[in-house]
Each structure stands twice: as C-alpha cells, then as structure tokens.
Image (cartoon, rainbow, N blue to C red):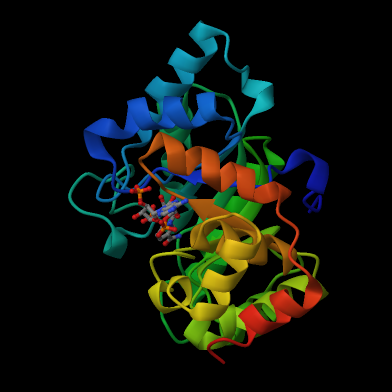
Length: 278
Ligand SMILES: NC(=O)c1ccc[n+]([C@@H]2O[C@H](COP(=O)([O-])OP(=O)(O)OC[C@H]3O[C@@H](n4cnc5c(N)ncnc54)[C@H](OP(=O)(O)O)[C@@H]3O)[C@@H](O)[C@H]2O)c1
C-alpha cells in the first residue's frame, strides 16, 4: 500500500458527525476557514454525507477550493452501526456491501475517488474476525481500483491491530481512535502506529478529556502562550504525532483550532500533559 505521504495529508481534519441539516453550511464554513481535510462516513445515523457533498459543490462553485485541494475521508460502517438508512444491500456479501457503500459515497461526495476509506470499526470488540478479513480485502480492492488513495481503520484496540497486521500483508495508512487522557492518550496504539508508519487520527480530544481542559497545568500553559486550553490540547496532540479532528460548529473555534498549529509547546510541557492522567 502506498504509505501516507505527510505532504498530501492535512494537519487537521474537520469532522462532520452529528450536524444533520447544518452539515452543508458548517462544512462549507470549515473549508472557508481553512480546513482542507474533511471526515465523514456513509452512516446516515450519525453523518449526512450527501450534505458534505452539497458543501463541496458550493465551495467549488464559489472558487474557494478545487477537489485537488481537499483530503476527503469516508467510512464503511457495518450494519450493526447503522439505522434503517443503509447504503448497501444487507443481504449481500460483505465484499459487495463495501463496493456498494463506496459507490454511494462517491455519488454523495460528487467525486470519482476519496483520499481515505476507513473501516468504521471491527465487527467485534475482542478480535479481528473473518468478516473483518473479508471487508479489509474488499477495501484493498477499492483502493486498487483507484476509488480511494489510502485505507484506514477506526475504533481498534492494540490486540486487534496486531491480529490485523498478522492477517494482512498491508497495514492501514490510518488509525482513527477516540483518545482518552485517562487511558494514557491511547499510548500503546500510538506506539504501534509509529512503528508501522501509520498515521494516528485522534478524535474526542476535547470532549473525552474535560478534566484535562480544566487542569491547572493546561490552564497555566494557556495563560503563558495566550491560547485557550483547547488549543493547548490540540498543540499537544500534534506534537506527540497525532492528526487531530475537530467537529466544532463555531467559526471562532474553527479559527482557533487551526491557529493551534502554530503553537509550539516545550518538550517538558508535552511530557507533563502526556503524564496528566496515566
Ligand atoms: N470513528 C468514529 O467512530 C468517530 C466517532 C466520533 C467522532 N468521529 C469524528 O471526529 C469528529 C470530531 O468529533 P469529536 O468527538 O472530536 O468532537 P465533537 O463532538 O465535534 O466536539 C467538539 C467539541 O469541542 C468543542 N470545541 C471545538 N473547538 C473548541 C475550541 N477551540 N474551544 C472550545 N471548545 C471547542 C465544540 O464546541 P463548539 O461546537 O461550541 O465549538 C464541541 O463541543 C466527528 O465529527 C467525526 O468526524 C469519529
């Protein structure tokens, strides 16, 4: 698999979950604010992917960006994670469901390829199943056919990543996980990613870590760097090698989140934040 070339991967991803009817306007606003990476999923229960497509069309029409300026990421979601609005025939084989989901995503997004196609989560919490094996092989076929540049996997444990690496010749280019400070900021999975040249995408960096945002160390750094606690967390995430996601609905937070890229925390501050909660 072509590894993820950092130059073609944006340094922040705008997440489009839970925005429903506001998806087109908020996604277009995020692009106008400067986001070039968009994360969505063909899972109508939590995402309105066609609404992302409407935003893209509007941004192209307005001349804000072209398709080539953007990094578009979507996901294949098993039926268990969906509601009744399925983007595939649930009676079909998993390999067919993957192809149908991808075809529907391309239609929603008005493109002939995405930049990253992510398995939303393995079928089981405990291991990499034969179903996951079939699904991943089908995703590789989509990549080989040029419908995605790169592949990823989400909501995955270290044990499952190890099983996946043993089962398949090709590792993912991305892992996308919820990142809890109290679980060491997913340290073991991040270490595995580093060793295998996988880019770790962290989500819920703010919402899963309210205690960090209120921590006096973070408050002190925020005062020192004239930044917000949220910006300190995003700067920390980037400095430990993560590609962060944000799903903010507010213009000023979109701007602040992007501006956090120019914050450079001293190594001892990074180590101290990493140690806050284990
Ligand atoms: N793979 C998966 O299973 C999975 C699961 C969940 C999420 N995701 C992806 O990750 C994306 C982000 O989700 P998330 O859980 O990280 O975040 P989120 O649910 O979008 O929430 C971000 C929260 O942080 C606040 N916020 C953002 N920037 C801020 C700032 N500078 N200062 C203060 N508050 C700020 C936002 O409030 P305001 O809106 O008021 O700014 C919002 O309440 C989703 O949209 C989705 O694309 C993937």
